[in-house]
Image (cartoon, rainbow, N blue to C red; front, side):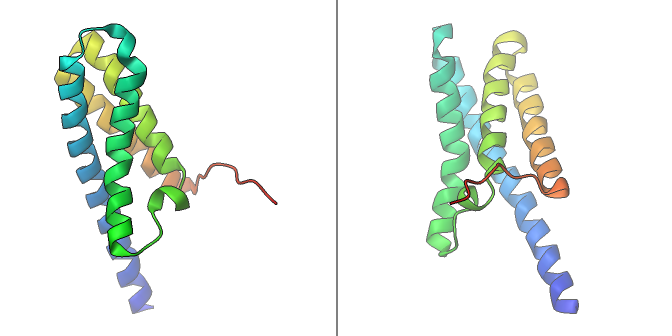
Length: 127
């Protein structure tokens, strides 16, 4: 029982650190890309880059650690990243840099927390 409790505590700790690292790196990169984009028609490209940055770091980390990548185990991870990137791009254009980073980060944290609490997952194809 003690081992299970320790394992769960470490899992929660790693999840919190993963969220903080993903958010800080992704949004600093995405804000730089948005500030360089002169055209408002680049929303898809900016969303793609933000999602790729947010998911790619975790994918690389998991592959180097020799564990199954989290994006292939929990599909909500990528959906939260897409929602955060889209909201960051739109909010940046309407309200500026700081509100975009704060609101997009809060959205991703909210989605991932609710997904973990309610055990949300995307539908699987049954063969």
